[in-house]
Image: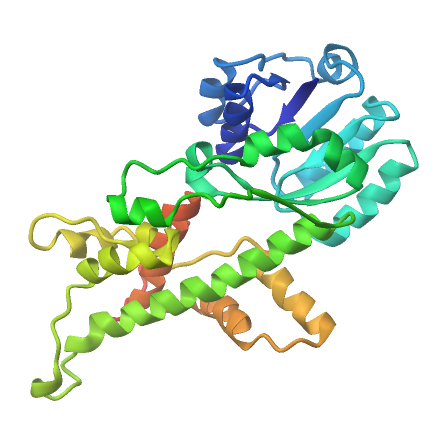
Length: 335
């Protein structure tokens, strides 16, 4: 079976690499990102004619795996594929799609005889070596048929070479890298809640380190001030807190190097939108979610007035997911 890949960005290209390492046969449009050419050189990726790829190059039943930005790009691609593919073919959406859109798309594609899987994908910048955690929604028969390929993208116990042995051992990929929580929409719903939970976890870690950093504040009586090496604490605790603290740990080295690490972060923290959807789901279900909501609002506030905690959040987003916060004007940063 051949798989058509669309969206060879940071995660899409790495998923393609993992599949090709397992000798899967791939085809896809010519990549435009920096990550794409490296993937293209390792497998059957690079045709310029999308129509020829989907209608001729892939053998039936066709499988097309999308890793595109949520919203208009994914909507347009699925609309085009809905016209090009034939009954029995399958579309996999591995992007950060809103789960209610999955339900609508699955219904529309079903009327044409097409199958649709929504696959929440987690793994960040380390997914190439460690494998991706895949949360899959859709028809069980289709999931079972494609299970070997899904497992190739998700399986693996790789270690990230940058980290010390104790930290590397703590961030190994789980033994079970895929799950099928339910029908269409369930995969992206679980991924949405997964991201919402991470908002809360990251916010709690960031606030805790802000407290550690300010243990020597001049606001405290002299006898109660503590000079704490925050970088050293992060190194030790990282072995217990997996990727978040590893990503946030300042570089070690000469005097002041850890302090210089934070100068690269303004404290402005973006959100992918999934935290908003998580809070929206909590409201619709009448489920209290104080911490998750507060974590989302903290990101909103970070775009107005920045604290050290938000610098830690920015570092975690970049270290785990490769996200680079937008450049903003001068802002006041709390000590």
